[in-house]
Length: 190
Image 1 (cartoon, rainbow, N blue to C red):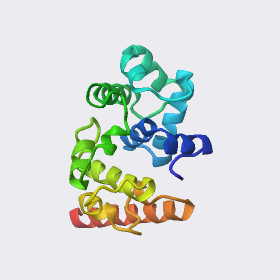
Image 2: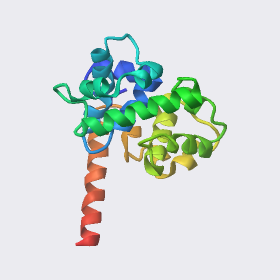
Image 3: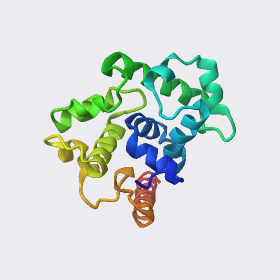
Image 4: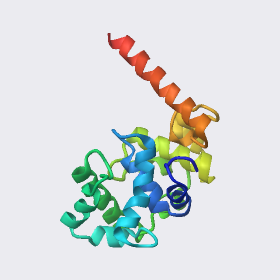
């Protein structure tokens, strides 16, 4: 795992499905490494050995937001993201008995996996496909049809998203691809 800035944060992502989901949720409008390091920082600020969906869901909203606002803030938009993470935790408690890994463990097809992830707060269709590709490529969560359900993100060696980041070189390749896409979009609209 090479998504976060510290070994401890990367280790948490590999060991804790909730941390991985939170990292992916936060991966918008901030650098990827910041998003995927924030679950470890949140774990430290909560003073726990492991993130717990029930604890997060039950936390006082203002106190939880304060954890996100503490310098350095966990996200560019700490209030909105604190609320979204709590909403995610509540859904995990209500639908999956607090077990984030059950979101993908119970999916019998790639399409169902994308659908389950897309139903979570902060996960639209594109992010659900990226997360499905991440699960398939780096965590060997591969229900039948997962590559097809992940779309272009499921293509091996595509270097399109976080799903393909495994080291410094692949991070550079993903960043180069994203810059090419932005330039192409700008040229098409300009």
